[in-house]
Amino acid sequence: MATGNPATALETATAYEVVVGVEIHVQLKTASKMFCSCSSEVRGAAPNSNTCPVCLGLPGALPVINRRAVELVLATGIAIGATNPEVTRWDRKNYFYPDLPKGYQISQFDLPLCSGGTLTVETSTGPVEIGIRRAHLEEDTARLLHQDKPGGGRLSLVDYNRSGIPLMEIVTEPCITSAEAARRYAEELRLLLLTIGASDAAMEEGQMRVEANVSLRLPGAEKLGTRVEVKNMNSFRSVERAIAFEIERQTRALDGGEKLIQETRGWDDTRGVTYVMRLKEESEDYRYFPEPDLPPLRTDASMIAGIRAAMPELPAARRARYSADFGLSSYDAAVIVGSAGDYFAAAMATDPPVDPKVAAGLLSKIGLREQKAQPDLLSRRNGAELAEVVRLRASGAISSQSAEDVYIEHLQSGESVASIVATKGLRQMNDSSELGAVIDKVIAANSAAVADFSAGKEQALKFLTGQVMKESRGQANAAAVAQLLGERLKK
Ligand code: ADP
Ligand code: MG
Ligand code: ZN
Image 1 (cartoon, rainbow, N blue to C red):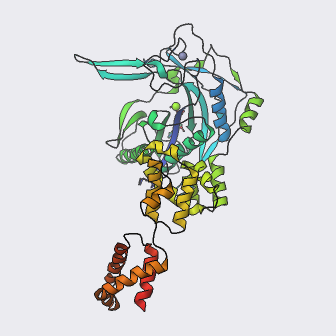
Image 2: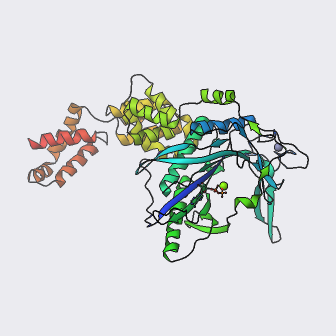
Image 3: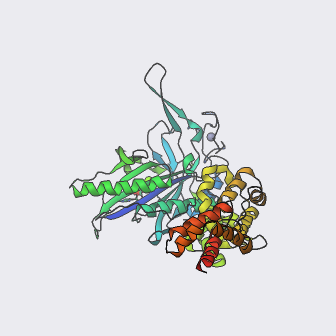
């Protein structure tokens, strides 16, 4: 979401080279589950109501591949410049846990749907290209709920509604060198997935889960250091904080002569620390083997050509276009494309034309307030009303503060921008004859302050400006007041 300021990188001073690799799971936007016809929409469903023999893992139930899920992974691959093998395969990842009734998860091991690719992100130190290793398709597991048992003890409940929902896992190379770049990568990937319609990727709803592998090594060392995998980060901000914390913790450990162990740690957002969850399992532990119930999958050329033809304009291209067409800075273009692309375009298409830079400035300022006010306000956005605020602001008819307030008020009440400005009396006094009269009145009534100013007391100017604002009931345009007052006092 847009904020007024560029994300500030968390300070992490370390003498070591930082190596981060990120694994992201996203829930794909399909109507049905990965291998059965149960719905993928489980919000509000009673526990275990959205299940069938396939996603419950009952013996003898056979999986059927969801074609849409395959297409969405292929589309992601095309968007990041990955290569698709002609044949991909399904594999069983074996482990025992109550969230996995079959005792194995159907995933892809050595022949994923997408291999390679890159995503370039903008950081405070410039653009960084992130290398992507692979993207593959797998199924989600059940959800466990741990509670206190009436009468004492603990109780674990299993809800299989989510079992079998299609997930895409996207894995980067161990090539990210800062917490900030890792965060930006996750944000950029989310925007890309939203753009191509592969996922809604709402982190707070668990539709996008980010895990970061963090290690340090001496500068110039060839071998990678021992990595720690960090989980449970529930916002982009926590992703950055958790990695920064790990860099610091590992630096201290290595400086103290400690040997790091390969482990999985969780992020505690309240305490701002990572804690040990378990020792990290190796892939041998999963005994991957080809899934006997599903044939290898051929990705035919016409399917890929179809996806390519339907590909929308991607965020990077759109940013470049907005910079070129509207003269936006790369920062403003990134904010707009990241949070308000279509909406901004709608405002730009109105007549008479509005100043794109004023619109971009307003949007990046109100982004956070819009969200805080009420997330569903975003669905009320209207390009014509935005254009109206921008016109009023650009002509000086309203102040920049009023522009923000009016706009938020419009979203909240649905009342038109023009009518809010009129009923609240927000129009600024710009007209120099009208304003001049107010200023003359203030000068006449405050001869002591005028004398002070002539004697070199700068404070007096502030006082007089304040009196003009008061006299105009806050409607005077501050810039015009400064100019007119200055002119009159110099005489
Ligand atoms: P796993 O089997 O645990 O998923 P992978 O070898 O597939 O492990 O790597 C998972 C992620 O960890 C990848 O993003 C990879 O780039 C990253 N990674 C691997 N080794 C390191 C390391 N030493 N330091 C940082 N990241 C690493
Ligand atoms: Mg992994
Ligand atoms: Zn099912």
